[in-house]
Image (tube, rainbow over all chains, first blue to last red; front, side, top):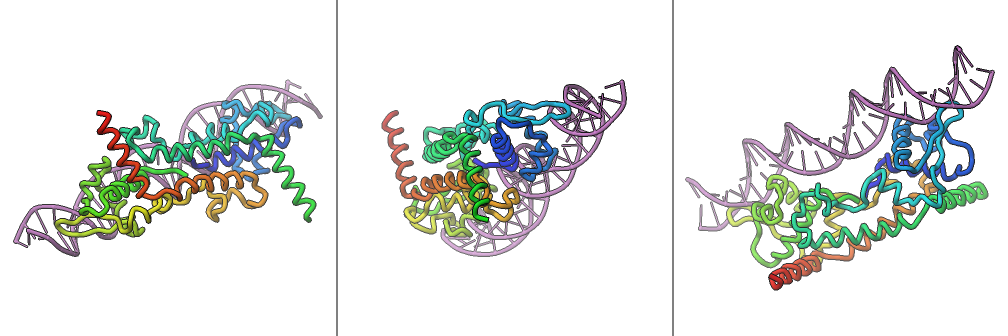
Length: 146
Length: 146
DNA sequence: TTATACTCTACCATTATGATAGAGATTATA
DNA sequence: TATAATCTCTATCATAATGGTAGAGTATAA
């Protein structure tokens, strides 16, 4: 698995929308500024996330973006897979990957599968509700420590 | 982490050399044929592996490659890191990665670290001795099952 | 001397990545 | 109804990584 900038931007944006859940919509401009993302790049990412069913949009003046589901219904892994593809370290099993003609003989394959499983354990067992909660706690602790 | 073709080729080659450990050298040509690797590409990979201290070479007629250490002294993770770089899913902590200016505030960072740790658990606790042994067992079981 | 290897550097094609550009569609509100 | 603020869509582009090819050079056993 490799998280690209696009994936990183998507995750940060969903997190911002989760932190704002229940409030007003956030504009692309606002979201871009909050996470320091090139605005035209974020436009495309948000359109992707919309097609993926993660966010909704409101057009026109007073428009903007909001989550399409509750933060508790969005798993980290879902977003990662949607934006950056499968989490396997190598696509042995993909038909695209010609390197392994006989996967049954490949001793490395079990290793990659084990890694994929452990990675899934992490990213498929945490939602954006939990992530938002963690984020709030960090921000509060920073405020108090000043 | 992403295993590239180059990494995949390197691992298969080291495995072949491990299976052959103690025997005669294997030529690039032979190694390429065994794992179906473009020969000129494998030449470069073997030179890399040599610089990395994983293999040794003998030049001239009757030349070829052999492991520079015992298979039990070569960890899977070492080769992966040497050829394909760090195993982290995203290089938050790298100075190259500008996306996270304040990593102390980033809740995703801990996730990536957890994944990296679990991945290390897998690849740094298995040597090519064990991998070669597994490979032998698979080949034997296939022979008997025919 | 020669055939068979490894060595080294350069080059190249394709794709993924990380954007940028600009025209268009929608909607609240003055 | 005009207009400003917003999202929408398609095209384009620069750079780097990846996967691979080419060819001349060096070493050595027989």
